[in-house]
Amino acid sequence: MEAQGLTKPRSEYRISAGKNLENTFVQGAPASDETFDPIQKLKALRPLPFPDTPPEDAATILHVSMYCNKSFPVRIFHALSSKDGLNSHAVFFKNNFTNAHLPVSDLELTLLTSLIERINPDAITFSVLAPYVVETRRAVAAIRKVSDAPIIIGGKYPTIVPHEALEFVDYACKGEGELVMLRIQERLRQGQNFHEIRGLWHKDDEGNIVDMGQEQLYQELDDIPYPAIGEMQMHFIEEGQLLETDTELYDDEFLVLAGRGCVYVCSFCVNSLLIPMNRGNGKFVRLRSPDNVIEEIKYRLDRCLAPSLVVFNDEIFGMFEDWVVEFGAKYSSQIGIPFDCELVPSLIKENNVRKLAQAGMVSMHFGVQSGQDQIRKDIMHRPGTNDDLMQKSKLVRSLGIQPQYDIILGNPFDDGNSLSDALGLLLSFGTPIRLNTYKMQFFPHYPFTNMALEAGHISQADVSDEGIERATMYEWSYRPKFPAFSRHNYLENCIYLIPWTSPMVRRLLHHLHEKHNPVLGFVATILAMLRYAQGFKGIATFVWARRIYLSVKLIARGDFSTLRRKIGEVKINSRYSKLRTGRMLSR
Ligand code: B12
Ligand code: SF4
Image (cartoon, rainbow, N blue to C red; front, side):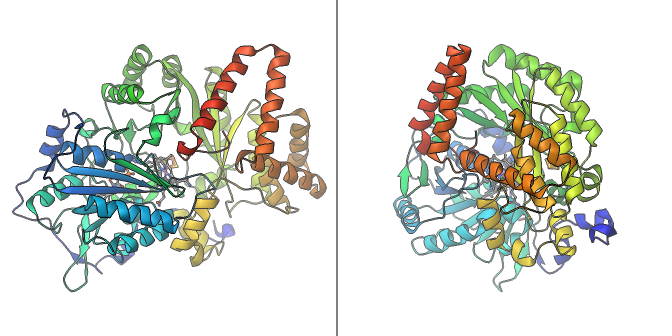
C-alpha cells in the first residue's frame, strides 16, 4: 500500500460519511406525541390502484427528478402520494445522456417555474445524485422566485452530506425515504411543518443544523408501490420542451429492481458508505417476492409500446437459490421477454445461473473492474481474482449467457503493468465480447476518493460539486486519450478497442499487450477515437456506414430475418429518438 502512496490501513479509508463531523450538529429527536404510523399506512396503500383522476381540494405535492426520466424514487413517490390521496405531480427535469448531458437552459428553467406557478404545490421535493448539485441549486433558486412551498431534497447526495444540502433547501432526507415521505404527506394534510421527522434534517431557528438521523431500512419491499409508468400528471422537460407523455412507454428496455442492497463494500461504490451508515438499522440486503416482481413487470408490459428486454438493475440479482428457483419458474411461465441482470462474479453459482438462463436470461453484467488482483483487492476493496473471473466467465458462456464485462479505466492507481494485465485478461475472454468501459469517478467521501486525494492523484477541486458535475456528465464512460504515446495511456485506449474484434485489430492488441510500441500505440489510439466517434458522438456518417456494412454482411449471409429485425429497430429508434431515455448511445 505504501508503494501506492497510501499510509493507512484499508478500513480507515472506509469511514462513514459525516463521522468526522459528529457532534457539530444539534441532535434532534422524532416527535414524541406522533400517533401516525407510516408502516401501517404503507401496508394500507399497497392494494390501492393508481387513481385515474386527481383529487379535488387535496394538498398538492410536486416531485422533481434531476436528470433521470427513469428515476425509481420519483416514480415510486408519485405513486405513493397519489395513492395516499394527495394531488401529486412528477416532473422529470432533464434526462441523463451518457457522456452527453445537456445543461439546463434558461428556457427550461422558465418551463419549470411556469409549471410550478400553474400547479401551485404545497411542497416540492427533489431527488438528487452528486453530479447534479450545481443544476439543482439553479433550479431551486429559480423556484424560490415563484413559490414559497417548502423544498425537500433526498437521494444519494443528501444521504451523504445532508448538512451541505441544507445550504439551499429547507429539508434534507438522509437515507431511504418511503416512511419519511408518508410522514411528510400526513403533516401536509394536517397543515404542519416537517420538523421532528426521523431522517429529515433541517435547520433550527438559530440556523443550526438539526441531525434527525436516518429512518430504518424498510424490510417488506413488497409493500412499496411500483414506480409509476404512464400515469397522470407526469411532466418531462428536455431540449427546451415540456412533454406530457411518459418517455418510458417508448423504451424497448425497462429497468426493474427486484431488491435493494449489496454484500460488498467496493471502495468506489456508494455501498462502502451506506453499509457502515446503516449498521443497526435493519438488514441491508432485501428482496421483493418473485410474485411482486412479476406483477410489476406485467403492469409495465401492459403499458409499454414495444418492450423487448427487462433489465434487472439490482446490485446482486440472483444470489439466493430459493428465490431464483421460484422466480425462474414464474418468470418463464408468465413473462415472454428476455432479461438481463447484474451479479458480482464472486457470487455466481452454476445452479442459479442455469435456472436463470432457463427462465430467459440472455446477458449478465460481469464486473471485472481491474486487471490486477492486488489493485482489485487492496485499492478497490473488491472480491475476486483474475483466475476466478476467467472460470466464471467460461461458466456463464457455457450456459448460453452473454457476459457484458464492465471495467473501470482512468484509475490513477493503475500503471502500465496493471493495464497490460487487464488487456491480457479481456483478450482471454475471446469473442464475441461486449465490454462497458467506465471512467473512474471521484464521489465525495467514497474510500477510493479519500485514497486518491491522499496519494495526490486528485485535488479537492476534482471533488467539488462542479468537478463532479463535469466528470460525471461528460466522462462517465471512458473517452479515449489523445495523444497517447505513454504505455499507460495507449493501453487504456487498447482496452477500449476490445469490442472491435476484427483479426487485424486483435493482432494489434495482442502485440501491444506483449510489447511497448508507441507507433502502434498511436494507431490503436486513432482506432479508439473512431470507435468513440461512432458510438457516442452518434456521428451520422459513422452510424450509417456501420449500418450499411452490417446490411451487406447479412444479405451476403442470406440472413434476411435478422436484416428485417434490424431495420425495424432502426425505424423505432429514429421514431422515438427524442423520447428515448438516457441510455448508452453506443448500443
Ligand atoms: C438503479 C441505478 C440507476 C438507474 C436509475 C437511477 C435512479 N435515479 O433511479 C439508472 C441506470 C438510470 C442510473 C443512472 C445514473 N446513475 Co445510478 N445507480 C443506480 C443504483 C444501482 C440503485 C439506485 C436505486 O434506484 N435505488 C432504489 C431507489 C428506490 O432508491 P434511491 O434512489 O436510493 O432512493 C431512496 C433514497 O435515496 C430516498 N430518496 C431519493 N430521492 C428522494 C427524494 C426525497 C424528497 C426523499 C424524502 C427521499 C429520497 O428515498 C428513496 C427510496 O427509499 C445506485 C447504487 C445504489 N446502491 O444506490 C446507482 C447510483 C445511484 N448511480 C450513480 C450515478 C453516478 C448515476 C449516473 C450519474 C450515471 C451516468 N452518468 O449516467 C446516472 C444518473 C441518473 C440520475 N440522474 O438519477 C451513483 C450516484 C453517486 C452519488 N454519490 O450520488 C450511484 C450511487 C452508484 C455509485 N457509483 O455509487 N442509476
Ligand atoms: S459489488 Fe457492485 S454494488 Fe456491490 S459494493 Fe461492489 S460495486 Fe457496489
